[in-house]
Picture 1: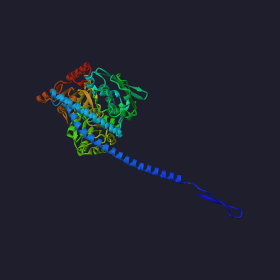
Picture 2 (picture 1 turned 45 degrees about the vertical axis):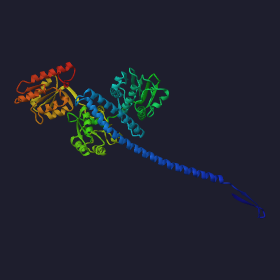
Picture 3 (picture 1 turned 180 degrees about the horizontal axis):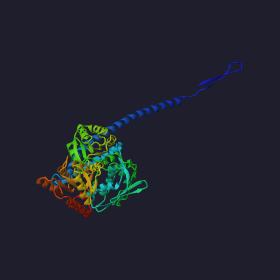
Picture 4 (picture 1 turned 180 degrees about the vertical axis):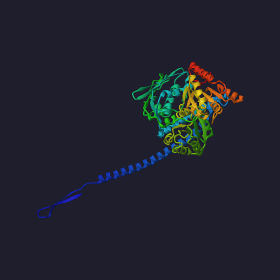
Length: 560
């Protein structure tokens, strides 16, 4: 409210004008605004508290998953691994009831492992804990592995399964996750296809993308369910009487893994007319060879590569060691951080497999110290553990990460990435002799037989050469310095790789008959130096060459 006075000419006020403004509404609006702001502030505080609760719940969930991963996979690793070893009957034959009972154990444990993996995978995807290990590879090889795994199911239902994946097709993706995607889609197709039906997997390049399609002649999917099947715990009811199988998580995980690859998946289906699941992934990208390739190419001074298995569980050590032997490695073991670091420095193994749950959190310290030391940093470390933290393992320098239980095929495939490639030189004969004159005469005999000579001065040097090359035959003088011919032959014959290698020996004049008799069982022929041997060696080697050409195979594969 305000006023203004108007004055007359005489100086006195003529009148007074006034104006009043009612601010009640404004005050009311300001009060309501303040109440609204107070309410927003209260809601923000409440939201912040809820966010903190969510973060705490996620942290507890991650801790729970890590614990459950360890507690569930540790016993399953032993159950599955040793039941597989029993099934191979290498430790003794099983009778029919035992094979049947063991079959139930293997089937049940693998079913339980699938359920555990599905639940843990879904939880990790939701928590953003899955990292992709991207590489460029040929999916045809992965498809072959998946079909080999599913072969018993395919044969049991007499289903015709056709793979139409070009051998030269390449994709840039996580090999393990692509295998998981294909396994889920193909196993679903087989499961819902009646006996005698057909399942077809095809793939092809479309521009910069690669499209996969899994077609089946099964029961089909109703239109209203085609989106819902990609949801968690959704199962398609194929009939009122048929029991539902699995957890209903497979397709949900498949879609999320494809999303992580920046791909997409969809389904086309009609009830009674089968289904086609299609998905698209990025195509090939050129890559530079990584450090793992450089390590793999490095020559190793051993007949067999050496693997250090670090695990405090004796059963797990034996199981991993057994798998590595099948991949051509000689395993040595360590059960603690101190022992692992000591053996890594002294033995310089060609590969380390590491259980992270050693001395509680000592596994992480082992990995850090191995990669920090200049002595051991070049050694590839593959984490083989019940602890599933691939991101941290690779960040700390691990060359690979596998989650237990690990099959023999999985571990062998990873181990072979770090195994040197041995050159086969079947047209070469390795001559082991320290005398220049004798070596020259032996070289003449080798050349006359049509082979190329390769020289070593003693048994130790010969073993170093054989670690990287496989000649067609070995010609060795028994009287050698450092490691003589007897020791060399015994060591070679104890190794399955060299059990069939043709060995021709030259014995000194004073060699005992008993020693000659012993050699007769380990070598093709024994020649004494006081007898005419050059022509006989030439004839023998020429015969080996002739038999190799007739058979169309290298000498190193054995002599009939």
